[in-house]
Each structure stands twice: as C-alpha cells, then as structure tokens.
Length: 383
Image 1 (cartoon, rainbow, N blue to C red):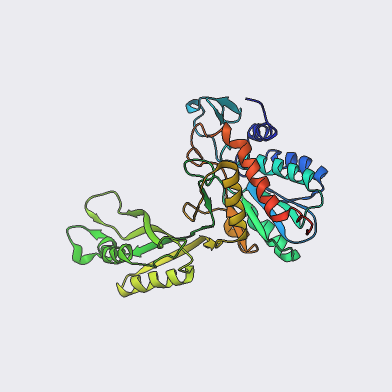
Image 2: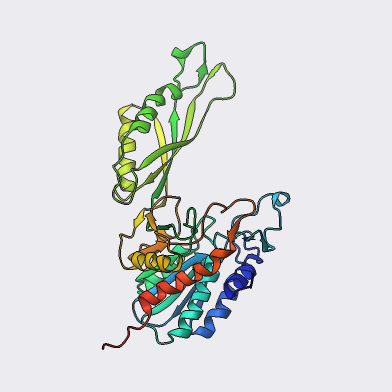
C-alpha cells in the first residue's frame, strides 16, 4: 500500500509514546505543520499537562477540531504481536497504541486542513485546533483549562468536531451528538459492631441498608428523551465486615454511579437519593463526585454536514447516538453550541493490539475536509 500523507503522520504520532499525561512532542509536531498554514499556536501547560490552542483567522464562524495526544498504557508487552509504539502494518491494518484512539483522527484533521487551506486560502470564518494530553487521565488540566481560558478571553466557538472513535461496525456508521453525565456517590452506612450471636446488642448496617438499596435499584429516575436512554443507577462496589464470620460489621460502604441524561440534573438526582435514604432512617454519610454533565447537540448544521460528508465519501447511513462513556466534549459544549464526535471504529480501543483498518485512514481525512468545505468554503458568486 502506498504511504499516504495521513498514514505517514499517523505513524509518526504513534511512534511517540505519549502515555497520559505525557505528550512526548506530539503537539510540537502539530505546531510545526500548522504554523506555516497561518495558525497562531499557543501552548498552555497545567500541572504537567500540555495543551495546544491553534487558530487560523479572526472571524466567525469558528470551526474547531478537538482531540487528545495522550494514550492509555500499553499493558503487558508480551501480549502484543508487535510493539505498541512501533507502528506496524499487518493484514490490512495499522497496529499501535493510539491507532484508533485517537492519533489517526488527529493526523486526518491536520491533513484535511492542509488540503482545505490550499484549495481555499480565503475561506470564511476561522479554523482552530484544541488538543490536550489529559483526556485519558483525570481530565482536570486539559481541555477544561483551555475552555476556561477561551471563555475568559471572550473567544466564541460555533462548531466543534471531536475525533473520538465513535464508529461501531464500519467507519461512519455512528457519530455522537451528545453524552450522558456521570455522577458517583460513596455511601457510608453506620451501624454498631457486635458478636453475631447477640444481634440485639449490635446494629447491622447491611440489613438496614438493604431495603433502601433495593428501592434505589428499582427507582425510575426519568424516561430519557429523543436522544438519550433513561437514566441508570448502578452499584459498583460493596464492602462490609471484618472478614470473620462471627462479627456483625460496624459500617458498610457502597459505591454507585448515575449515567444520566439531559432529562435529569445532578442536583435533582442527589436530592432524590437523600430522600430515599432518609425515609429509611439510615445513619449515613454520602460524598458525591460529578465527573461530567450531560451534553446534547440536536440535529442541525454540523451534524448534517458530517452525515452528508460520510454519505458522499462512503455511502454509509449514519446514526446519531449518545451512548458510551464521557468525553472532553462535555467541557467544549459549555462554550460551543454544536459539538459532534466522529472518528474510527472503536472495537480495539484500549486493548492489546489496538488497530485501525488501513482502508479507513484516507476516507476519514476526506470526511473531515468535506465537512470544512460544507461550512467554511467560500460561496460561489451569484449567477
């Protein structure tokens, strides 16, 4: 197979072992490519995290490509059929950590912009890149920091395409127009420890909490909406007891998580949980962690442009979806009204032998370029 510009850049990025939160020079490489195109590049560092904000143009609308250069650890190296940071072509696929999540997307974005700017040097609006090395980690010093900076400066965004691996079976069959929020709780139910033969002298927190937990599990939190399934509540961990079989435990810890839609709010869910626990008369402490608010981009200009580009390039009918975990789109959606995620198939992400099919690499770049053409290419003169 001929090495295309996008494939070459993808391999160069994979070869940099940018395990989160390290960037290992990926963003420097991007800056070296973007600066000659007229991009003003800024590096924003925060607690060891490297972020890049690059913008070409000063006018609206502002179209942003967003993504991350960090990758998850490779895992056991002896289980890989080729070294994770030595990009390898094999059996029609490109193997390497980040091949799908998401160095191919970043390479495709850059090459798409190169081609677009060459063809349309006087394009409308502005093009920007928002790249972080803190998406796979805690995500507290990455995209959110850049978005806060942009908001303080009064820079407004109109469209954002995030290169997350959203496709399911074939490239382009699914894009994400939103994500559910994630709200976690750490519940500590207090009892009185004692000998199991003298239960009247103790208070078993497991027995006391069981009816409340059953009610929480059975609760209907909302009905979802056109874009989201109903909110779910799931227990992830339960711990109680000393390890001995003759001791009533003195406390019980329960970790749980909500994945919630725009039909609910974090404050509303918290209040309903407390009401159920209080109604059952539990002696408890409850700590909450909100990892991300839900966001939604209804069908509109950006989703139409991407779906049309996919159809023209691949002949694939695209499904809009809000499934999956959280992404940095949740931060960008606070300052940008239209945020869509689209990238390679996600079946191998975070796995041993992560890969992308070689036949998808250039079509991905072409779809990104077509999307730019739909939104920023100058209109032809009136007849």
